Length: 602
Image (cartoon, rainbow, N blue to C red; front, side):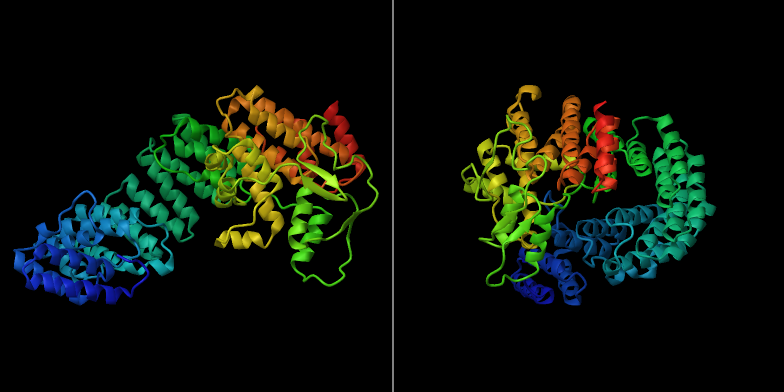
């Protein structure tokens, strides 16, 4: 199948023409193959079903022409489903249609007369019908987007007919309610679930009713139904987590955590409760330790019963936990003005109150090649000097310009970083895992990427990032530093090359690279508990140093360093307090910083 290239109906007609030729020649197997292709293109086209009926008549039913092999084609599955129904086995046919819906929910596999016929419900065992509806529900989101609901309408019609015939079957009513809820029929979902609970009271019935009420925005009734589900089965801790999530969604965090604690008291390792507990505790007090504990749990329990998104949800959009922070400072402000304006002849030099970082100068050069940058008299510690004398330099300064001391990176390194660099990630451990693609690059190549960031790729993301040179350069630097974490991982951390190189970058000149290298160290602490004390000391020291410098001049990276500190596992309380102050007051008074510095060093 050539998806998206041909008109589906025309493609189906082409397959049907080949099927008819094969049928006239008596080649039933090839005819079946082409009909399967036609069904995949146009599952409700009448001519497709007419040709399928001719094949069935010529072959004594035709079911065996569509075997369920290991790698069966979806068109063959659907063709077999229709033939099974024609042979008086509609239950088996519906199960195959539901499987096809699970494979491709956007296709209208069930939009055929025999599925929506009222008499089908009389021939279908209600227990089997309930399982089929649950199979469909498991294959689609809750709720299904409005534009994607049409292919599920035939199943809802089937549910209506089945419920009318088997009005007292609790499981069928609950499964029908679940389907109705997913396609936006919340009133119908409540009505069916209510009838199901009355007909056959059960935990599952109350859960379905609770979900229906929740979808309708009737929180009080939803919580009451879920609480009754717990009474039916106090050992089903997933319901506890559902109740907690519902309470949390409405700002009732303390009550939510009470339910989580009840679940954890029964089983401290129950994954849903653990994930929900850490997410809600972080939501309540903002302490990163809850998320680190959740990451530890995920690492130590790789065989959880199902995927959870609590860690990614908690980190999404948060500085350094889930995305880059924007660069700051006068040079970046000027850069953003330049991006929005055309260069004019005789443009005057850019005058800055203090020296721009090397990476900021690089971004300016991308937008304004040849731009002269002038700097007022430097007060306080010179940002062009490393914060520690033994740090390995990456640049030298000549005529106000930062000149890289490294040769450009290899073509292989450029290609890999362009494929990987991105301004966001689910959470720090996920960023670490993604950077493994840089593990085989040499340290020299990774360092060269920091000072010679390549142009953004011509992908959709690259075109967007390329409009903001500062953001793209920071993306490259972040992932290059994460790549350093994967260098010689067999070396013990304390004396490792990766630690030494990252520390050189942390204590080098004041630059965006400082932030990126510190993020790599913070990420190392997330994935390896044994390095947390060391990383926490480094972060605390670098933050304190930035606060000290800020007493005498602005430090554009200070707020970003503070956000990094707040993302650091096991950071001491004094450093955490300092980071909170810096984040709350990005340009604090010198006297306040001086008092904080004294308190920290005391």
